[in-house]
Image (cartoon, rainbow, N blue to C red; front, side):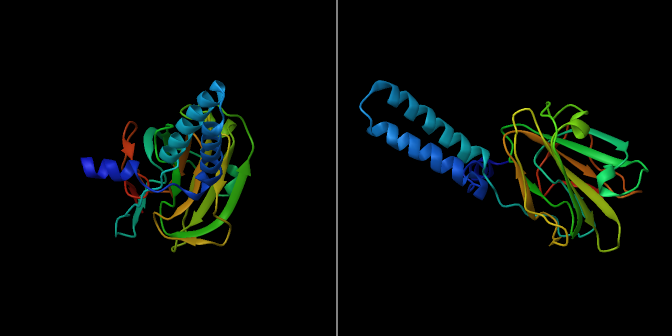
Length: 225
């Protein structure tokens, strides 16, 4: 990544989900500066730092997905922590036969906007309350708070995306609803402050990435559909 691209990434506009955090921290920082007592200065500095952190965490850069409609792209930024065959979430009614699952861990420094891996229609949304274990652990897929989506492609095949809350994350945001259609790379949600996103490929589709690789949501090719 070039220096200019890095600067554009850091200075990208914040996601709308940042507004309450920015308003609260900004107002606190401003109010603290107007108070005459010393503790207020420390409060103002802390609020200012949190304001800057929120600008960085909630950044929402533009992404350009590949023109080839037969490719599945990364649903999130981050590092691939596992690539293995496993049954899709039972709540999505995609059968019990194992398919390839690509798990991507998002650190607090990664862009946390989730994007659709392919063009299709959302045919199932299933939210599960749960724990807040470290999202890099494999058991987080079954024990943590999570939100699963089934995406049906134009040819009738299904793939799944699961948003998983992490050790710090406490809130999963999902704008997708059953019946909505998306293009590859379109935004559909966000997870606050550290998380994981799992992609379950359709049967017979092989992954093109391996554990340890860094993903760019909406751009990095994960599989050929």
